[in-house]
Image 1 (spheres, one colour):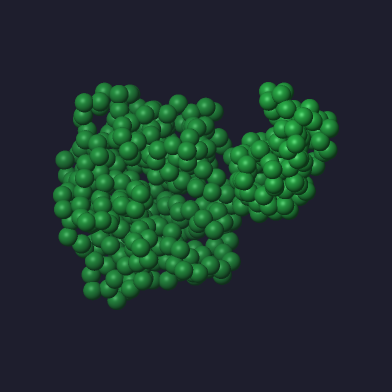
Image 2 (cartoon, helix red, strand yellow; image 1 turned 90 degrees about the vertical axis):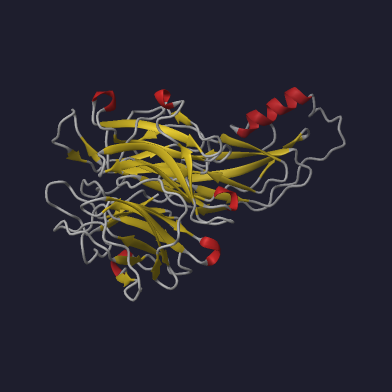
Length: 464
């Protein structure tokens, strides 16, 4: 197996010999020992994690992949002493073989070559529906120890009644066995009913909470902050320093920020003034001055001619950007006709260290202009996941709801893709919610409307 005839990683090994001038038997260094048993763990539809025992005397490793166990292709070159690797971007519902090549100047040896199938990327609509349909609500994923759940607050129902209730869906059981539970029914305080607000999950050093900001109550835009203690199920309205101004249809994202967590808020619409907003704010959730608002970007600013136009009903998520600096990704939204159309399909990156905007130019097919879609970051596979929304072909309605699934990524790159699924997507919708259940990993879509009188109580999950 080390005679240079193997495909893939052997090419890298021979190149290493050629460049180093080694491999002629002049060294007393022994061949590496065979890597310890290679084990595979399937992590969803497009990722398999590899672990193996460290060799002795290796200069490095090459990870090789095969679609049939016969034809091998190198996919990664790793330094000595590495014992783990994540194979990303694999085709779903496909069996893959892997092996590890340990090499040094004297030659190469290979591990065993196990195989494993990735899972199918399929929608699951067997979840029990919520008691009340909702749109323009907020939802977060709560690990809740060994009993994970999706927590939902506010929104409006199919009678356009604004809601102030909080419910949770059990995610620890099979979808058809999952039940809905009302939360905070005994809380002394409850946020006023609202919709088009935002919420983030804050682990809060073992005292998890849901933090809610803004929205609109049917008359005014709101700028209040509410906190739901997910252990005691009590709502509180904390004292807040500073104010970003009332808004609805904005986005919020949780930023761990190196141990100084904060809630990032971008854009939105001030209904009272009829003003579309383009600023970025951060609400501190820890540290010496919790619940303090700080401006990260003011609009208009010195760089505003080259920055995104103000917008609302866009999608945004925090991207830790492995290998780079963390950022907030923003996609689409309603910019009130900037550039000639109501909606847009721009993808922007906002640096969370430098505070500047960068217009992304992803490869692949650019999606159509849209608003009111959901957007989350899939950390397992290192890309954004966009679903649904509303499109129009001109500056005047009618609008059309979408059932389209999009990926943006992965990692530090930017590429659009429309992944295939093995089952029918949810009904076309917008102003729904989406959360990531990392244990799957899976995407959970809840509620929303089709704009033609239907409001959805359903939950649909997608294997990621």
